[in-house]
Image (cartoon, rainbow, N blue to C red; front, side):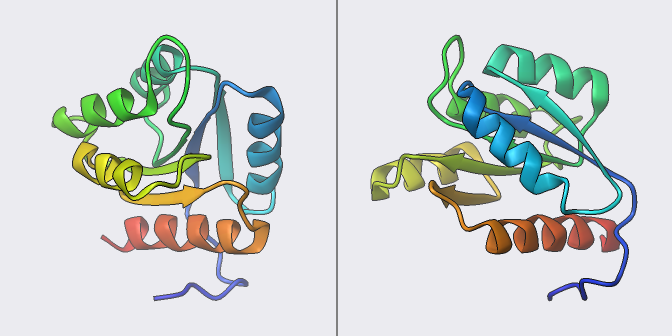
Length: 136
């Protein structure tokens, strides 16, 4: 179900994780188009796990290929923990082979977007995922 663009979302926190500064900046800029959210940036998997513990985000936009800990490992850890398994995780990555998508699904990701991403579709997806979470 699509949320009308004029309907406000409840206050939400979105953790954006990408080791590439330009990609991180772009995703953060896209998130500025979604009203009533706080964006929390992180540059690697270990930092992401620390920010999840500290900030309790509603949604995570997660790159896969990162130093220290991959997005696959971050997703697997979060989805296996009862205190974090309900956080929505969207993998946003340059990987687009069927095996990568399958591996992401096995880790528990809620959605998967291949870069480059379309801004409008991306913003709509985030709004709809947050709205669905608010209704549940």
